[in-house]
Image (cartoon, rainbow, N blue to C red; front, side, top):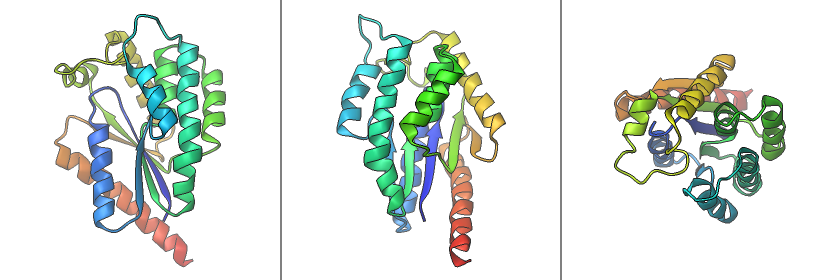
Length: 212
């Protein structure tokens, strides 16, 4: 029953909420599942997450940022994602390699050839069966974060977040069979049902494939 499902989107899109909701639904149905996130999900990843997300006086160069995220991903893939998939679990990951493509690629301006090579090395060929993109206008997404202390990424200029959103939509358009694009301004319950409909299809398809 192994499936790999990732959640993507700009700041304030609600992906973490929906990833947790999907995990809860699978657990209630006694379907073995693992919920993790990037950057983080491991002891090393948690340490690097603090470095990457905390606003700081010295700047992290785009290239250093790229490789710090790659280090998190390598640890997560080898220590959590691949072992869980090998055990037949549904693995849900809040952000994965597509985040690097859009944030460090479209957002920071690192070339696509470099991004692709680093992502391929970090993921070891592990690719999602389904990627849920919760799409939200930049202003609305950032508005949801106003009451909180902004991290390094949330504090970026609007133009950066516009590039990130455009990058996500381009990736989804290039690979529609993998991506599920949802209007993140819809009610949470409605978003959850849209996600579950697609996941249920994948689960049914997998069960059928086991019978043949």
